[in-house]
Length: 422
Image 1 (tube, rainbow, N blue to C red):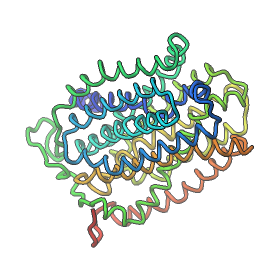
Image 2 (image 1 turned 60 degrees about the horizontal axis):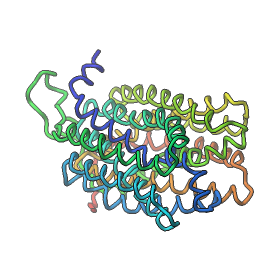
Image 3 (image 1 turned 90 degrees about the horizontal axis):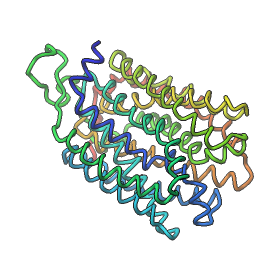
């Protein structure tokens, strides 16, 4: 009941954040890769060549995000979100009318920067700053928009492409962003929220200043970059984005290898979405009760198992088992990595700090399609690559366990390093 009261009391901010993550789908790999075959045919590209273009565009977006991401610390969420939405619509139009490889590269850069990057970054940063005691729930509810997009868009997009063609499908995406997403997001987020102090009664009119409730020391981005535990955590951040993006980018190719139709692969996405939302909400409740730091060692275990299952088995049901297990890790990770940065480092410089972590995720998602595509062209099967991905996940779990222990002993941000930076 308390969970539903929380949703009712905060519906405008949660709905606005949810819409941001839903429409970030236009720049997510799972969506762009639905057009992979048509794009490769239109521009006469191999798997490796398209993967290389995708990698370059995504790497450029990651580098730009580090600089651009801090704007959330200086301007209202509504203003930033509106501008990002307009830019993402422009990127969709550019993809629709791209007629050369440089134009394709620019379109991918813009889709990745304003879709996967800034739309998601703005939403999760806002939740991390606006909430303290209920931060885990706010982050996981907002992050569920990613799964809404993954559940609805694959099959819908396949049907739309069949009806009107792949270029017209991108024009339709731009129209949806401009005519629906932009006004709805602007209206919902135009009022900023201030975290309520959990020590006061729920009906109290007294509002806490940001971080008053948590008493977390405010680390700057320079402080964070000098923290070795931050880089240990990044080892965990990189795995879901690398593995998930690699699979989504090559989903049609994987289906061909396994003998599964494109429709069968697309039909499995709702399983992942349901699993992600379920375990995302569970992680939000656990984070608010236990802390994100204490959950850190566990989120990569299902991911390692999922890719191992996909590598070993060829039965069509494998696709659904893989999606279910990957959804567990995705759900846990969205909650953990939405809440852990303000939990450890505070919220004053959260936009700048999250821009680094978001850029690391985008970098990892860029490396995945490029590296795996090059290996496929070199004769290394994707199934073989999956074994290495699984091994990385299990080794990273050990690193996350040691990092979690170190953060607990340190007090998870209670003490700031002596040297201040950016």
